[in-house]
Picture 1: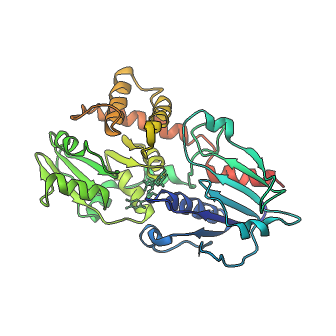
Picture 2: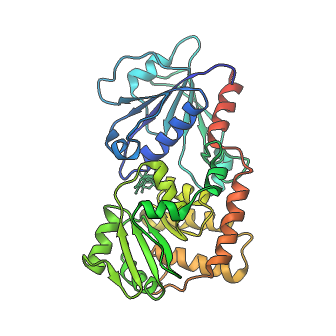
Length: 356
Ligand code: TRH
């Protein structure tokens, strides 16, 4: 990229934190690479804890009607197909229109490679004559790859987990597992806590849904068997990464923590965003089929059973835990494989440069 471009990112917060989580992560990664970014967001409230310091090069603007009248930048990105404000689209119709990108949801399903990079000529409406381009994050070179800020693997490798845990008031006891929990409402949680309690375990519980369910299951003492719990506050995004790096096993959910758990190169269980008619089972399996390619059949079967049980797609009231060291090797190999892919921000920069 010869000179910094002006980027307009639009984020519509549907529910939970993934829309803002992904949009913020993309915005700061672009800014880190010298781009000027305006993040238009309808509900910025989560940024108060997710990004309390903000970030140089990123201007956060309230996406409200009427939208402040600003000249669209060189690139306009709508995240997750959030449908841009009509007035802004009308202003995009100009002799050198912005490059218009729809940055889609992350999936390992095969349609992603077929859809990545396709144009959508706007034949009518406020953007008539413009072309919207669909870019998909993903797990292969035929996609945009995952968001991976420069230096991520090295920072993770240099991370001192014991020091970080101590700063959260957690000292790992001899033989204790460190497990993080970030999940949706999950009816199997009480039984899985009992199963975790069979071995010395400290469970690091994220606020809201996870904390409420753990308290309901264990009471305010937060203990059962050999399991003890520590409830965390909402952490800034880079501290949430450190939670994932400090844990032996991560329960994550949605999209952004799912991808960050892969960069943590540690065993993880994904609570996929539930969809009607169990459509999410297809998305879950599509990822497992890629993730488990190099796992032994026994390990693959154990991990698949865990993920299906945790997502209510199979009846697993008391999970059988796989061999964690073997799973850690798989996790590291997978993370190393992902690191050879293009990173999503670089893919977007190259795509835009290619549009001249
Ligand atoms: O919160 P989510 O369930 O978001 C979901 C998904 O993105 C889903 O795909 C989308 O359709 C739905 O929102 C609308 O899970 P996700 O994607 O992991 O986003 C959580 C973000 O919050 C992520 O960026 C990590 C961040 N986070 C922190 O920074 N600190 C914290 O303490 C916690 C608990 C989360």
